[in-house]
View 1 (cartoon, rainbow, N blue to C red):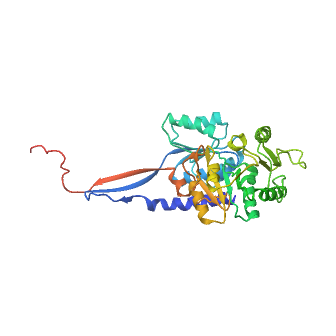
View 2 (view 1 turned 90 degrees about the vertical axis):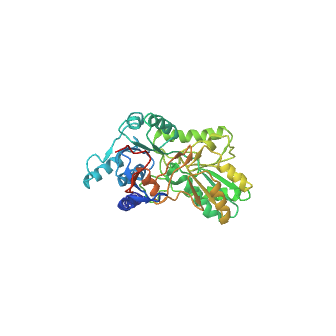
View 3 (view 1 turned 180 degrees about the horizontal axis):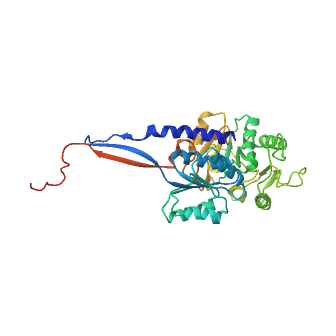
Length: 392
């Protein structure tokens, strides 16, 4: 909730600064012309958001869209609509003009598809699965409307041999088990140097054993349930498939013994993984970490980039120059150094490859809801002189 408030305040500040940036002059090579740029709201925007951060993901889109001057239609996930409906009530209480923000709950094939193809929707901003994104792009293409897509991920966390092991272990579990692993930028592929792998995995198991799994309303809860039965079964199938393909479940992989109901999954660590396995290649969206070792920096980078996705990635090392090298070569929209998952509304967020395109947050998030128009004026008193004038 602190992030929700902070995001609104950030874009309120940017909105106030927009007028000062209007009519920004353009330097031209001809003194007979003057030119400037104005930025205009792109129009009516459809904002389609997922269930994993139902209000925060909505605000990442709603706040910059309203700051830009757009009218917005917000379509929340059918699994988590209530906070977005509550947002509508708050907007009504603060006298946001009717029709500026519209909340449209519903199923994706009905509400989402209708927005993507609607002739009066000028832009789509979508956060969700790559499969759904393809359908949205196809529908939007029929009317040549722009889209911003923030999609799935299978992020790497590369841990070199010079690290403080406990610090690196904590960031590793935070990067994958935070929010029950239900985060698109999760660094769910641990790539650890072979010389420290045994000790690192031993500490990783001990830290994982110490995670409190409970009703999320309980004080101190660090891992709660999966969102739905369908998602729970999907996560458990990933774990089962990994075992059948020859991987080893080093820790977890089951329902916690003290929780008899609810869709809880233990934090799970999977080793003996090959790059052809499903668990290495596909997004789980649950608390499941797969592990591979490496010997050289080049091998680590190759493993990190061995994915169709490119949202978030992390590198952990005390060698600053090495971190810079790896950061530049990682094919991700965000790279975290000696940490995983920090997110600030001032910094751009988005992916490459199957993780989408366009950026949310920061000034980039505002720009994505603005259309740029150049205005150029002929200021000379002289005739233009391109054509021969007619005789008087």
